[in-house]
Image (cartoon, rainbow, N blue to C red):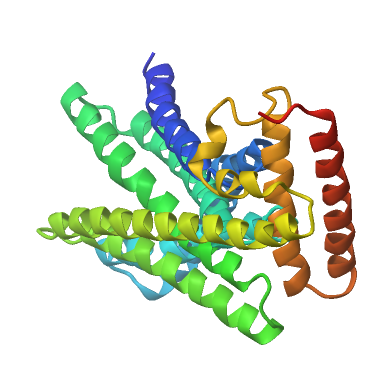
Length: 317
């Protein structure tokens, strides 16, 4: 019974956070299957690798640190953050190679998904292990669902944001940006673990994490507004060459596009997705080179044709 309840307590909050993050990316929402793949990597692959790597590193550290308490603190404050953020980030590097991953907001969504998956499995293991009394179990469930799981989301989302920033940079700046993102992820993780490991400063960790959530909310909002402006700027050219009606420009680059009545409802979502993708393909084409640039340029032509046919065959309101 405790295993079933612990599973629900671990799965439900992290899954809700995942859906919220995914839906907040309203202008170029990522494919949910790819988001889920990152989530399950965090829940399964990253946890398995982290357990193996942590055991190996802790075994080596035990040869140098004989005091058991000091070893536990070192493992929590130094080993766990480094090992876990690296294992979580491995799949993020694979996702980064996808053409769906092209900006800071995408990195936050995919990185956050991995962190939430990792937090879900870690929470489940804690809930099953520490269930000596119901009040303690409830307190543990609340703290880990509201804070520890969120910390994993924030830390890996930080790495994802910097990978999104790095994707279209030159090679040397790409590596520098990516390593800084990993350093930041490890730092967030380490600060949280340290506040839980040192007696009397737990409140510092809660203040730190709450502040981090607010900072990320601001970053997310700013990135979302930036996406809206990019869509507006890119589609403005499309109105000039006749691909998109001028009356649709402001609608397609704002929340108004979600309301019914301004376009044939049978094709409204197709039109929104095609126009948004066209805008981002134009940005990607300018930032890319070689085969990728050729791919994006051909996609621009295809989406212009698709939109033209859609407008011809739809009844615009």
